[in-house]
Structure formats: C-alpha cells, structure tokens
Amino acid sequence: MAASLIHHHQIFCYSNPKPHFHYTIKTRTRQWFLNTNPNSSTAHNIARFSFICCTSSSPPPDTAAQTPESCVNSGLSLFSKGRVREALVQFDTALSLNPNTMEAQAALYNKACCHAYRGEGKLAAECLRTALKDYNLKFGTILNDPDLASFRALPEFKELQEEARLGGEDIGDSFRRDLKLISEVQAPFRGIRRFFYVAFAAAAGISTFFTLPRLLRAIQGGEGAPDLLETAGNAAVNIGGIVILVALFLWDNKKEEEQLAQISRDETLSRLPLRLSTNRIVELVQLRDTARPVILAGKRENVFMAMQKAERFRTELLRRGVLLIPVIWGVVEAAPVEKKGFGGSAKAAAALPSIGDDFEKRAQSITTKSKLQAEIRFKAEAVSPGEWERWLKDQQKSEGVTPGEDVYIILRLDGRVRRSGKGMPDWQQIIQELPAMDNLLSRLEK
Image (cartoon, rainbow, N blue to C red):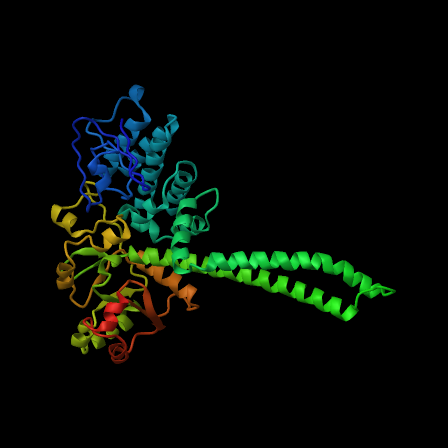
C-alpha cells in the first residue's frame, strides 16, 4: 500500500503493480493515481485536487485475508460497477478492521458517495461529518467532487456547510480559516478596528474603576468630597464609551459572519456547472473575464417569456457579453443509473471541467480564453439544477426575498454579483447599464 498527501487537499491512493483502472478526470469513475511518490513531479502537477480514491486490479480477497485497504479497493470496484449495496458492505468491513487514518477517511468518504448516489442524504452527511471530525477530511473535497452533486442539492449539505463555516473543534476548522483569509483581504482593517475597540474599552473600564469610588464619595458629600456633577459626568462618559465600543465590536463580528456566509455562497456559485451550446460543461468560474452570466430563475412560463424578449436584443446583449442561464423552479434531474457504473464515454469525459483545481487554474482550465469565448452562444443550460436552485434560494434569503419568487441575477465579469431583482429583467435597461466588452469600463470590471 502506498499513500500520498498532495498539498493541503488530500488524495489517497492504493495501487497494485498492474492496475486495470486508470484515471479519467471527466467521468463519474473514481480517480486512480498510480504515482505514489509525494515528491514526484506528477504529485506537484495535481496539487490541490480533491479526491479520495483507491485502485485495485485484483478480485476481492478472501475473508481471511481481508485488510482495510483491500476492502476499500473491493468497495470501489463494486461501486464502479453500480453494485452500491455490496460496496457499502465492503466499506463498513474496512471500518471494522482497525484502519489507519487514511484508510478510514477513504472508506467513510466513498461510503458517503454511495449514500449520496442512493439519495440517502442523512447517512451521507453522517459519514462526511465523521470524516471531517475524526479523520482530517478537507471540506473542499466535498465541494469539488461531482459524485456528491446530488448531495450538495440537499438540506443536509447546507447544514454540514453551516457547521463547517462556523468552524470549531468538531469540523470545518480549515474551511473557516480559508474563509477568514478571504474575508481579511476584503476587509483588511477589521482587525485594527477590533484592536482599538478592545483597547479603548479597556481604558474606559479602568477609568470607570477609579471613578466609581469618587462618585460614591461625591454622593455622600462632606468635607473634601469631589464635585458631584463633574464626577457623575466622567462616570457617564466612561460607561457610555464602554457600551458603544462593545456594541461596535459585536456589530463588526456580526458583519464578519455575514461576510463569511456571502464568501461561502460565492464559492459555491463559482463551482456551479453549466452546459454551453457546444455541449461543453464548465464551471461558472471558468467564464470569468469572458462573459456576464445573467441567471433567470422562476416559473417555466415566465423564464421562457423573458428569454423570448431577450432574443429581440440579442446582438446588443452579445456585445455586452451577456450569457443567459435559465433555472426553472422544481426541475431536478434524477441521477442516471448506468449498468457499467459511473463511467462515461471519452467524448463526454473531454467535455467536462477540471473540477477541484485552485481558482486561477479553474478559471483557465479550458485551453484558451479565445476558444471558450467562441463557444459562448448567448444561452447556457444549468447542469445539476438542484444545486443551482439551492444556491438561488439561499441568496434570496440573504437579501430578504421570499424563496421561490421569480428573480434575476446579473454577474460581473469577475464573477461577483453585480445586481439582482425580483421578476424578470428589463433588457433595454440592462443594455443601457452594461458597457460593451471592448469598453474601458468592462476592462476595469475584470
């Protein structure tokens, strides 16, 4: 058995000398890595990729010779053939054989994938929660894996993501730390403000500590007693300052939590997949600097009517890089069940994105920007609409809109939300608002 840890995302590999499986990045087949030397160039080339996988070319071992590694390998082999129930038995067996950290993480993670495939959200969440808490699973792995797309559309994923965002000793500490780093970049002076809040509150508290005895003496009166009005004024200023500073500190904390929640939503948005007119599937982040996606979410008839109206302004909207993405409420694709597991054709594999790379690599993962721009044809199709719908409803809640109402969201060229509104957009107004792609304002938006 060999195992490699690739940078801060973990990739676990168990391989035999002559494996029959090889990695195909764009299919639903689990990933097979054959190079297990963490110092090799291959290891560095696949840095930050988030998959937990095992490979095996041999048949399932006899019960007497079972090890956690062999059970995980056997489970993956069964999983790839669509024999999910038998795969679950193998993963459970691996967990009962005193596995090491990597083996336990691989067993729990792939067990969660099995439950997600069967639509068992609670069981999948339990497995992932245990892997996060006890076996150092990175939350980014859950976000990146297309085999968990159906799970990410469920309420159980939202609960798990909220736990990870809040951090703590149980799960998600690394996920929250990453979010806080992004937050500090966006609000670099928050830490300085907090320092002054604490420092001034402490100074006011010390002053109040010495002022209160003077205030008592002033109230009692007598010879040598301090002036009552002056002492009471000083105490009021100190206490008022403490109250204001504590309120500002709590307000800043609340704003930080709201910002972390928005960053988490933005990260989820960047990973949402869509299909271009050429049948190529990309993540939304890969359109950065190339298109301005306009998401139209609502009832079928309202969305189709908005699309028809947009056709009248097609030329002008294309000049502004608009790409329409319709999302119909309540339309959720069922996961296809294939007799030969999760694999796909080579052609389909080539069409899928390199999910899991870092932001810049994901943004540049299609050969060239010009080639991607040539494939954009005004409309795109939301892949995994359940994930899109969950993100849209979370965004509606954050903006005080009743979830499920018709809304539109216009994104900037850099992928951030430009503006949103209820109902369907006024295309003439959008044409007036958005600069052309060759305009200087568009370059500043990238």
